[in-house]
Image 1 (cartoon, rainbow, N blue to C red):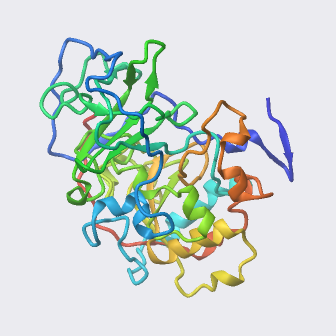
Image 2 (cartoon, rainbow, N blue to C red; image 1 turned 180 degrees about the vertical axis):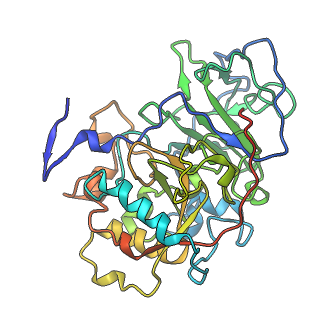
Length: 379
């Protein structure tokens, strides 16, 4: 049932999740080894527990270094901090921006954020955090256990999960774990904790030293459809509060070009749009750097996004039910528990789905990027 919220919008317009039947195709150079046994979750931590947890607090508050994008090192190796203000406009920009405008038109001309579901949840694991064996839940009905989860790199083994860590609400149930002392980053998709306190996930992966990763997980691992780290392009509560975003912002589209047209820094795609004007996974879009953002009649958050888009741009990272931007998870209680959601205070009287109303999409262009070869293989 749709609940009317005024001005012709409804809660149905806020749906941004991908569901649990996602398929993607990845860049060449990897293979999958089939194992017969299913993954088993560890109900108890492998290592002794500690009492401390740092939830969504990677660095010094109020500085650029407090955002996870800083974990990936300096530009140009870090795609999230690359300055694209002077990058040339792609020759296909006009056609691709017409595609984006048609996607926006399907939702009253809006791109949205959703502060209650389909967000990006992450926690920081200090030394001594208990480690778990994350069980493999075959929600995509692969029919086998993919290689690398419990053999080789063992991405689902010895995962440090703080006691207070919570996957994001919604069907995607994203959860990222950052271990500063080991410089390891885990991201999981459809992450769940069972009644016996064990953890399971449908997919995920680990980056050993993000500063050497180019922003992406080893193919075909990770939690995003693009292979890129989800935390690298999310907007955090602290960024919204201070009105400054100093990294590229993820852009989720309702339709994305087929995998053979994937662009770096993305390494894979779940896109199905074969039309010539389809926007590729990994495409980077930039707001006109000459636009005077201060004069725009938009919200403070939209202005922060606009300034970031002028310098760092948007990176297409996901397929979604609506054109949307990824944000840090807010809810810490149950669904509808506004008191547990810090976004309620930060965004003020403007609902989350109207925060980007009036954003100057007509002044956005696609900038040139290097294409990444892709295959038809799937994890």
